[in-house]
Image (tube, rainbow, N blue to C red; front, side):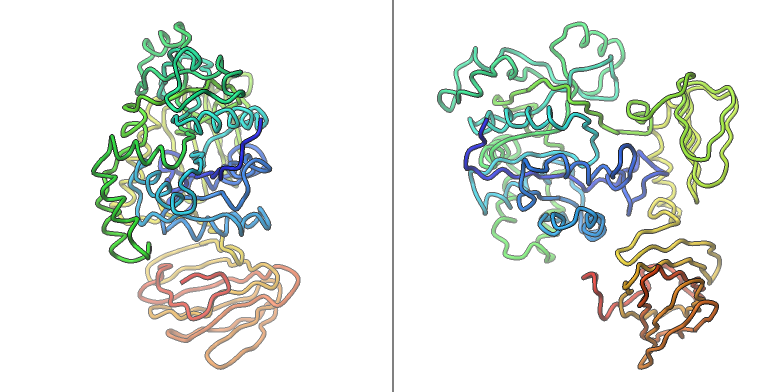
Length: 491
């Protein structure tokens, strides 16, 4: 089935903070950047799923300004394709309708008749071939002037997903935009008009949906022409559309005017704002191994269970528990006689919750934020484009880190106004810039970086450099940094 000459663009929604996956996910390392199942992270799997189907030049990631830089570095393992992927930056998260609208107005300037494939960055799809086959069908239907989504064939009466009810097959209704293409016409038994969208139901309602047979899980994956979604936003979300028109007239989407306009847009999902109201929605039933990792209990759908229904990962030991999810870090995590419980242990935080209440983990994150705790923001080990650092200990006026630099990598030329640093080389050779000096420090040697001294750390060798950094001062947080030169484009 050919896709024609129109531009097909993938828009990947990657602005979420993943609070429902805490403590595995953090604000600066959200769920989409985790390797949960398979050999790669969820975001990189999403991009790989489009390989040889949509050109990397036409893959757009929409995310917040805070996450964009880290995501760019996160994509580096994709090789040359990573440099071709483009970004649409939200100044702040405003739900999916404003995000989709911003993407649509951006793409409309390139090609008004382009087709958008909108998908979250944190879904699991195991059957890529079937996914691409269904996507071809959706794209051709979208070119006829429809909003198309996938309805996942339900495997059970699930209460954690929204549902779509299908109506008549497409062929039984006349097409508003003229006769269907041959491939769409031949596949009419695979495409249905959507009759209704339903919020997450209770168990009894979900069981009824399953018996009726024409209800599907809402995948949250959408396909439409850019011009069509803008028309529907204008019709059903006029206030959002007016704000969008103002944004479209701006020459610079990095200035304060854009930030103010975007922050004033209505915060609403594209489902509620458009899909539930439009008369031109089609649903394509699909069964391509889809899973929406909405919260920690969803791990049961994708990770292997033992004979008692337990998921045990990492350095975990269990005796007599049933239907539990236990994920351990480096230290031993032992559980005994638990039932329907989630236990997640990381280097700096541990979560213990009943499965029934695990959705309340968001309140834990909110509490950490209110108390100015770092555990909602970053892991103890933080990946950087030059390597990584691990916070070993932190106290009043001091912090101790282990820093690992990749071969030939270097940190930015920088200065700190509130702390001094003492560096001890554990392995490798450190090349140090301190003021006007440039010198090497060998293993088992150390050097001192005074307060307000311009400095840089480099690894000139072919093996990783490992140092211990001891910070001391009246403020030892990560935002006490002023960069003068950076190989990775950070400000």
